[in-house]
Image 1 (tube, rainbow, N blue to C red):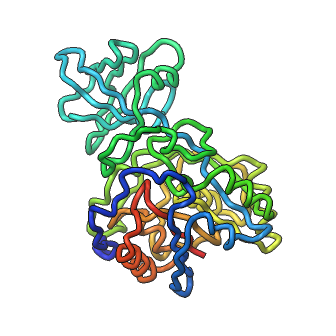
Image 2: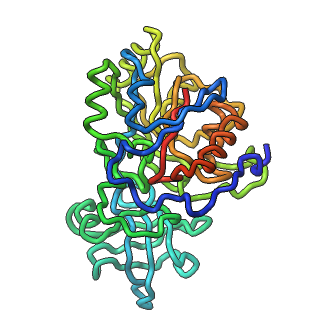
Image 3: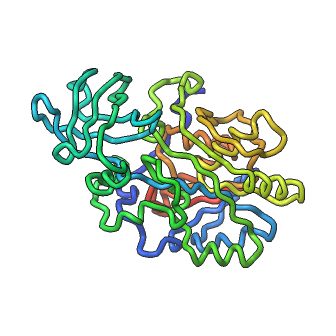
Length: 341
């Protein structure tokens, strides 16, 4: 399938640069998965579309302040490092700017040596494997020296870093937020639970795949990068109970979807599981885990547009996007939301 099939026109003015004052006041486009019917609401109205016995699955990953600015030890040249994925011990997959000047054996210093990163392997497209040396606890050093790694299409500085975290973020390890969850407030989650909607949590740490565009013409040739996921037994039991009683599993975001579908692809039931997934979901994929999806509006020709097209249809999704553009919805990380049922 040609990558151009997932393109659409988006005026730059519709790319949201800042979050709304109130999370659940964002707009909500409700799309009929099988019909293509569209209704326009606000996110707080999502409670009207969920029923007692349904289970919402949220990704509780927490974004690290993982963008560091430092110096190359040998030359004093300025360098930027974005930490993406912890591999083992203190080895991390990172993106560097400028990457071409950093070779195996080079050392970078951050915070006057509070963190020293040595390059141990070069990867494609600016990627490197770096071995970190520091004293104390890494999270404390990052809190001291790091910045929130906002996506490159957000040009404005974020006054409140917590607005790039979900209200339920807990498991630190992501290079980007699971943005569909940014619309939820504690109050809205309490209202959903009072209605009888179950709330379940999984973890997927968002890594390199979020920052890397599709660079092939035929999407069958695209390779996803692996990201770490985890689901515990209590969540697995709740999801199995939901299915067995004829209720729906509603995934909050593409990250939750990829985790659930990874676990279910070779099984008929949910089980506690953890590991690395490089699952690539695009039209033709057979969903086994989810019955509904809450998601944001994604970049043209991205793997995320392909995923939502697989869950509904490419024509329905692109038509919904065209309507959203016409009505001046806000797009991408700090933008509005879509519910596909």
